[in-house]
Image 1 (cartoon, rainbow, N blue to C red):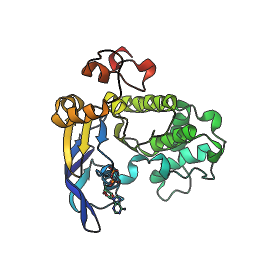
Image 2 (image 1 turned 120 degrees about the horizontal axis):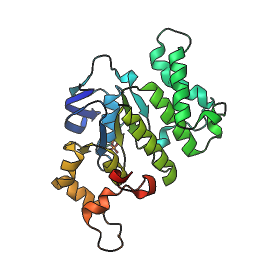
Image 3 (image 1 turned 120 degrees about the vertical axis):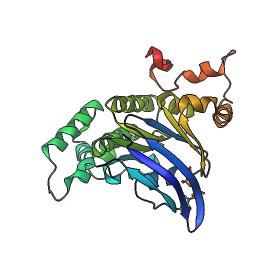
Image 4 (image 1 turned 90 degrees about the horizontal axis):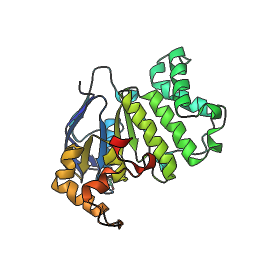
Length: 262
Ligand code: ADP
């Protein structure tokens, strides 16, 4: 089953084309890393998938029963209202608003899901605390829990961990891996190339158009992948570390261990 299929998508602002020729699809359990320089169209594409920006050409098709309002979305940290006057539990539960319909109250199932997400993200002790009193990392955890209540099939994240302490983002990557294990698909824009390629199984590389879509393995072998990885490899390494070896090690996962040893 395909959750989302994007065909011949292009986007423009005031008639200026900023992204074109985008064609890809997401299956359940996929983890798609969207890569590209600043201004390459990553956020615009996410807005298109979320139904916040109409495509200039092409279309986004969803699996039966899935709509943009049923996707979990975690925006960039800078877009988050840090002084939002609500408690942690209210914010997490508000993720279920898209399923409320005309009901004035949340259903028992939604409340149970919110409790489960808060437990998993270790937010239960903070349930009654005001969101605005929390640290940046705690706030991001609350918003991840909210997104996991909103989206049961697909989670969309736009540089969600930028600016967070590495230990905090390590913890959040683990939470995402857990959600993925449960069958959740993930689409994530991130500048953390190493972590993205470690966790993802598919890559979409944009540069005002689609430069690559395919598996992480194929991306590593591709000309664009090698050149992008080469650019990011300018941080000096100790000793003669081979390329593949350097990039099999995750920068944020437990003890920096390769995936297969965890
Ligand atoms: P990225 O997320 O990869 O940094 P964006 O999708 O934000 O890229 O931007 C792609 C292009 O669209 C850039 O040239 C940017 O200046 C332009 N753009 C983004 N948002 C707007 C907007 N609201 N109005 C006009 N141009 C925009």
